[in-house]
Image (cartoon, rainbow, N blue to C red):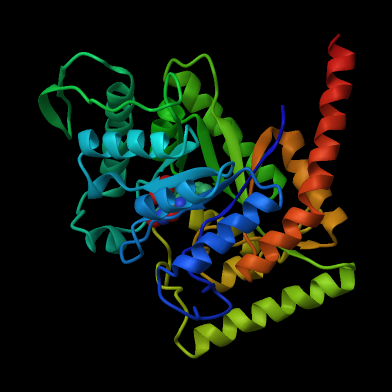
Length: 368
Ligand SMILES: Cc1cc2nc3c(=O)[nH]c(=O)nc-3n(C[C@H](O)[C@H](O)[C@H](O)COP(=O)(O)O)c2cc1C
């Protein structure tokens, strides 16, 4: 199966290692970064969601209307919208992008962040809502007759949309989370299940949990698996490790001067995915071929935060280890977003694609 690469569609140049130089929605930078992903072989970019951040849906529409090939992964939190409305937004975006949309449904791993936009459900209740929300959105995308809905979280009557996605039967659904409630909801509804970068053994455990949840939900297929990393590459191993330590020093300096955006997880995070990253970091700094955890420890395991450090060859081999486990969507984001997207696209993506093609050809030969 071909491998896919997901990058980041940031709307400004800020990161954990440096403040942004312009507006939060920097139109020119947003397009430049997305175009670099398209030019350097990436498949898709994530438009993330944060309570105070620019709305990712119009940002995604802007990128889709300026670029021809790059696919869009739109993060969306159910608490900010009604599913009838959201389904039409997604269908419209799939039209604008000529069928390049995937939607990443975010349940929310932090009560305080959810409360900022009026969401006071517990995390497990939020997962129950997400599950219902996704099933309603799927039905709206594919139903051409008016229908009623009466669920636990939503009730409406006589709704039919007049705008349908280009992709048939519907755009793909992406989902993340590492708690039992997350596996149950995502196992039932997700086409793509997203994990943060843990060691191979822990990743294999999570893949098994997702597969078991999909089976328990009565599915005969399983979600595709995506894993996310922060690659730190350089021409030699020594230079890559120097760069890694420089990156860590910059994260620490930003935290110390209080300008960092690292605000989601101070203290013990509520989010199981973040707790897992901190547990991995507590076990040791280095795991497997190239996984490095201090960047996760330093940011409280807030999201995609574990690094893969080394030459492009080392990092490509590390990614192939995950491919061999059954991960066929690789998500990567550097710390200097634009330059790192170009470097990774130029030096790592072709190596991984080439090796995956060899493995697939070999498999076809032995199967045939
Ligand atoms: C790959 C990936 C991307 C995510 N993107 C976002 C995001 O853009 N915004 C956000 O608030 N949460 C994001 N999340 C958080 C999850 O959607 C989910 O709310 C959280 O992980 C749930 O916590 P749990 O691990 O305790 O189940 C993401 C998670 C993953 C795995």
